[in-house]
Length: 234
Image (cartoon, rainbow, N blue to C red; front, side):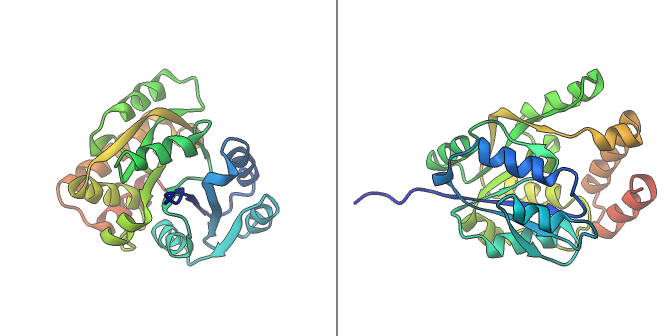
């Protein structure tokens, strides 16, 4: 009996991403095979611009959600019909044929993982920090690298912790590292450097480092969010 082919549900949490949502959706369609993609779900946290309309126009299914990336991604997973969930930021482009890389990894027994990362910038500073994403250590992980996970494992681990307004990706991946082998695929996503350019590269990287340290020392979601609001959020 022929084994059923694995299919991917792409989940993209958004809030006011009208400027870039069409680009990422068109890219995903052009750089994957339709038979591998179950659906593209754009989970909108209450955009005041045309993000939902643009997403629908470009072939995605829009799901309205309460604001909060963890809530949005959990809701996307609940709606997803695919065997594999692929969480992606709206300003990040995965490598060509990313779907084949993900399915191959899952077929080889890896239930979760991510790609390495590059920035869309010529900054030597950002290239230096992006280099570390090739290392398979949870300290080198982040949501910008995207995340694939079987729907079964996602449900077994409880998904994203909605108490985390920020740092939700890191908290979840930290739990995944403790429960299973986390695969780092030897290809790169390309993510926007816009936040670094807006806030200052050294400053922003420093504050992210402090958040990692605070988490390591036992800071909870409220303490991390308080630091984020004071030092990073604009």
